[in-house]
Length: 380
Image 1: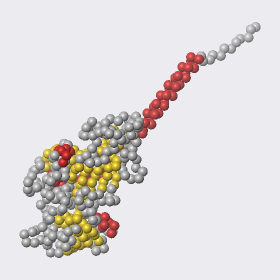
Image 2: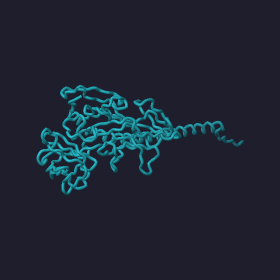
Image 3: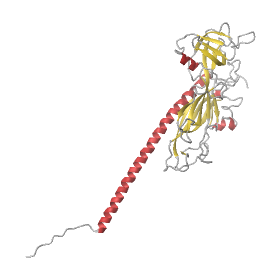
Image 4: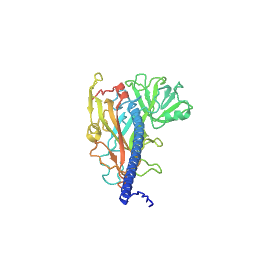
């Protein structure tokens, strides 16, 4: 009787190769899905970070814009209530187009990026009215009221020599005089000029001993896109800076620079609503869409530095802030901006590393302090 033979089935070489190919395809697909997931999470994290920085920077901008002209004059050159005019015209809002810092790793890398600088005047420092107990020459004595600064540090922070002291007389005239020094213990503020007195034919000044008058501080703050000069700052890093400016409206006060938005690359303004009514009784809004319509470079000058500017008529504007990612993404292609008012979709930091992603936030801001004051020119 013959013995049976057992046959063991196996894989052919072709079958093994097919299985190997399928395994490689499956592994590759899983890797691609994983990489795409990681990349999506990275981009999402970057966008969330950009949103946080934009919101923080925009809130600061909007808060200070709303206080432009607060407890101050919208425009001392056009304000008949401000007598004994200051040496410099003090304007609630001034725009300086094409005055920010733009990183250009090579010529034309980031075309049509021209950040605007914003200069504001008002009380951004205390928001409080204080009372005088007397005025003698250039020395103003303050009453110990409930809102008087509780410490010498706070007092010196408010009444410092880079600001103006605003004095409202009994006849409701306003005096804006630069502060020279202050003394917390004696509750005094020394001014650069003597406070004028009312005299025959001149109502611009104080009467008697100058007691019981409302006083407060006012000064300049400036927003601009500037290079980060701190030690260890990455090459090409620019930020949105808030800084205090001295009496002249030009000189930066040392130690007051604050980074409001890291890696900011552009700051723009548009849709300016101005009240063209000259009587102050029937608002007549006119909207100027572009900054070239209202700033010096475009010839308008209503919110620029020219004599005859009219910031007192401004009722609203739209502010637009753009920030970029800290690092460039090799998979993100650089799309140069096609025009000054076109969307800014990317920013070039290093031509070898792709491009940085950008995010823009725009918000309309009502200039409530200027609307409440509703200052209108009495002359041409």
